[in-house]
Image (cartoon, protein in one colour):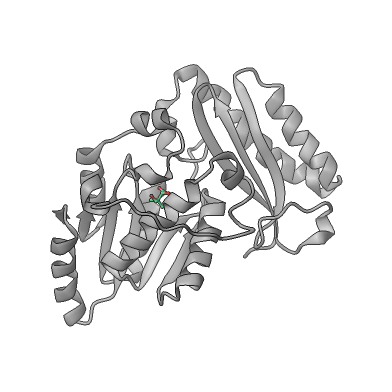
Length: 283
Ligand code: PAF
C-alpha cells in the first residue's frame, strides 16, 4: 500500500491506474480506524481494482473546537489496518493541502440538512460536503463507500452527488457493532470504562424498541426510547427522531412511510455518540 500526502501525487498514481482500465473505489475517513471502516475498505477491495482510503480530520465539519482538538489521531495504526485490509493507496493530506485557501462554498440540501445533526451541529454538513466533494474531484472514483451509522450524512452525500451531477455510485454499508451491540465509532475510544458500560443502553434501547414498536404507536415508541435514555445516569439525550428514511423528516404514525428509521444522538459524559435503527423498509 502506498501512502501519499499530496493531491498531485495521488492524481499521478490514479492516472496510471485509469489508463490501465482499472476501477477506483474511495473510502473517505477521518482516521482512528476500526472494524466499521475495515468493512467499507473490504467491500471496496472486492468491488474495485483500486481502493483509495483518505485519512483526514476535516476541520470545517467541526462546530466545536474541543471536539476537533480531542478527535483521536492514530495514523500509524490506521495504515497498518488498511494495508492488511487490502487498500491500494492511503491518502493522508495536511489541512493546507486540502484547504490552500478558505473554502467559501455554501451548500444547501434542504430539507435533509436542517434536521437532527444539521440542527444540532450548525455548519457540520456544509463542512462534510466541502471535503467530500474535494475528495471526489481529487480521486474521481467509480464508487465511494459510507457507513449507515451516519445515516443523515449518507442521505446528504447522495443528494450532493445528484446536485453536482457527479457520475459515481454511492454505496451505503451496514452499521458494524461491537459484540455487545455498541455501534462502532472512532469516538468510542474516548469513553471511560464506566461510560462505555452506560453507552450500551443506546443500542440496547434501540433493539428493544423494535419489538415495542410492533405492538405500540409511533408516539409511544418514541417515548419508550426517550424515557430509557433519560433514566440512565450519565447519558444526556440530544434527540431521538423517528423519520422517513428518504426525506429524514419526522413522521407521526407508522403508516406515514414505507421506510422508517429511528435516529438518536446523545452525550455519554463528554462524548457525543449517534446511532440508528430501521423499523421498516429500506432494503
Ligand atoms: O464520516 C466521516 O468520517 C466524515 O464525515 C467524512 C465522510 C470522512 C468526511 O470528513
